[in-house]
Amino acid sequence: MDVSKKKAYETSGSPLIKCSCGAEILLVPNVKCMSKAIEDHVEEHKQKTQNFTEADAECLSDDLIAKVLTKASES
Image (cartoon, rainbow, N blue to C red):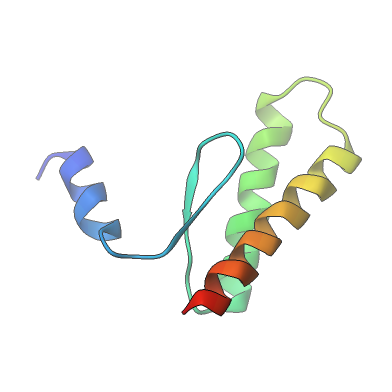
């Protein structure tokens, strides 16, 4: 199965949150896993973005957490 089709199959109908960079993160019903996914994504931003400060990391993390809570409350 082609990778793009596999990804679409795996996430179709699944709740996703979207980062300001456009990346989509699968919402899972496990707080520890969700926290790890957010931390990993913030770490990607740190590595890819010049001058990405701890304040930027905290704002991004807070935004993603808010999106998780909003999406979870809709379920």
